[in-house]
Length: 338
Ligand code: KG4
Ligand code: ZN
Image (cartoon, rainbow, N blue to C red; front, side):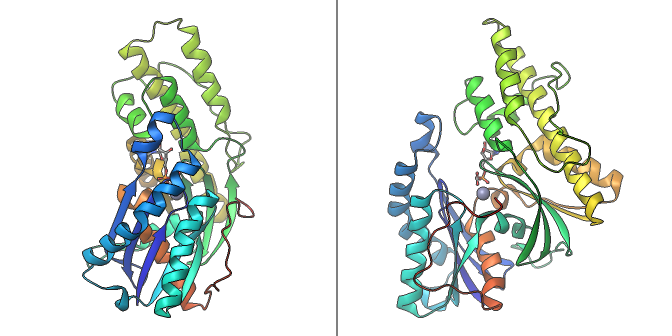
């Protein structure tokens, strides 16, 4: 069964063709960083306009790369939230139109719930998927969420960010250090030049065993620290600040993921979302997984950040279970629980 997955909930226009919920035939992503970077953040109106321009070429690209035509597609999956309403509506309207014209089913998926499904995607023949129930840490620009995935299509929220998402904290600290937007990858690179023990930023654990997150305090602590340097922020000091900030965030993410495994008795951990591209987080998780006998699944970076393949993977299971949508389906910019 071939599913066309469409993702436009934030600032990337993405489409993918995925077979049976796991084999990726194509995945095309058109980034909008060029238009938002000069504003230091996403401008919703510009994002939706760019989605309108990109959606047809991106879907065309995904079909061509997969060597199929729209007539070969058996179903369409689209992110219907959470995210920016104008952006979501572009993908959702497009999916409905194609579904209506081609008389194929379509389904609307929860963007956050689709991130862990990236662990089932593969391009080669052999692939070891995670076993249900598993814990998933979704760390992105808008969300830091711990989920217990009970099946492909059902989950329980174990913990959530109470304020800033981890990616948002990375982006704000990057801005403070003059690294541009989005700055997560730039912090990752700069941190390799610094000493992670040079500044002891307080780790926001909330309480032992608490699975919620709070990253706004650490962002303010970095701001206060940089102001205290009184203009003496050279390359070396910036590297130390980046490495120390990153280490504090990574400590909390790794520890809370392990607490979630302990609390649920699960042995499998899936980590996804843009921040899961972070090299220090990946290294620390691998170390912890070896020590604690955890089966760790971190998809390759192209499937960690926003993409259409994860949407197609979740959509496949929803369509198989009859969870299809009607033409009056609306966007869900806010989604209960997230
Ligand atoms: O999942 P994603 O592509 O989009 C959202 O749904 O938000 O995540 C984007 C976030 C941004 O905040 C970006 O700075 C962060 O992921 N990010 C990183 C890295 N690469 C991307 N954060 C830390 N280290 C990285 N290497
Ligand atoms: Zn995302």
